[in-house]
Length: 468
Image 1 (spheres, rainbow, N blue to C red):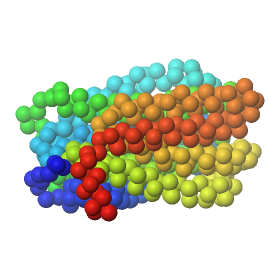
Image 2 (image 1 turned 90 degrees about the vertical axis):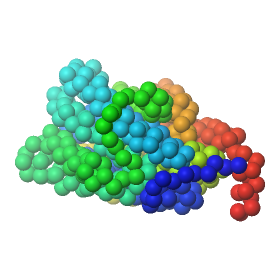
Image 3 (image 1 turned 60 degrees about the horizontal axis):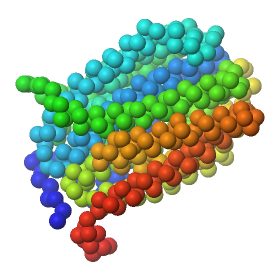
Image 4 (image 1 turned 90 degrees about the horizontal axis):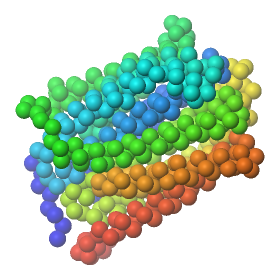
């Protein structure tokens, strides 16, 4: 028999989370898709405004991006662990443990944020010199240090959003993200050009916008206190089993996302080897568009983690499978449309990055990148959304294995072989990214599908057939 879920409190988000899995995926994913797209737009706007300062400026930001991505990946990964742990406790009807989990997560975020940011802040010039930033080293170091100072704020925003998503409150998570992103878009031109701060102005804009999001989230969680999960530090003490549960998913999720940062770092090195700073500028501009194209999937993935986590906690394994397949259908449709639109309008999109004469000469290379990378998008739906199921049900190590397989084991060697050994240059790098992603996504989807089907109990299948 399926486990009956006890609900101590009435809460709209929780009712959605524990309802029909298809409805839950839609209702949690749509707000997060909107938020992710808008949030990523500010990254692209950053690149567009910075590109107006010339190739050196955008290359400097490009060299910093993998390290910032690493920090965000660490925060987002811990957030996934928090969301998974809380949603599973909500699914099992244990609100008290959900509350404890949220409080433990706040302590974890501050410790990890400091461990991450401090070394990079101190050794910024050395790091960028080591990776070949050459004439952009000083500019990259200044930009990076401003961003590193705000790391605890950034981590707080990620974890707080994860708590809201875990209890099905995707709308407020969206609002916090959108407000920060819109503010960043407004501040970028003011600080970069009006106040003549240049590249550091883009960093200040990001920090200020993140601070506003953090203040709003703090109000909801600690002052208004109308969330389902309650955070209290009265009589607080660390609970090893909760920390272990969070980190068993969170650390693999962080490493999983950091592997993407490592992949970007290594691709930058390959691109720099093949085509120098110009190649890095092309990749920096083009990848920002690719990042936007993947944002709907990240929005869906956050919903999948919460929905499958709650279903798993309630021992409703057929709902885990239903949510998985339904999410992939939606993601595949969206990414196919995005790929077609990007392929057709690549020349128009490229105009945003070629406002300066220095970048105009790279126009054809950027167009070529965007048209090749279009084939990357649909396959990502299978890989990313399947990985999020592993995270939701608490199988963090499984999600790590399939992601490292795709990003490090497949993508980097494919890019090097095609670019260098087969002498295809930049085109080889782009094709390598696409082929490796397709292979990795197929492996991930097959593994998750087999694993979840093994969990489904005979009586669940019979009940599901009756409903259908």
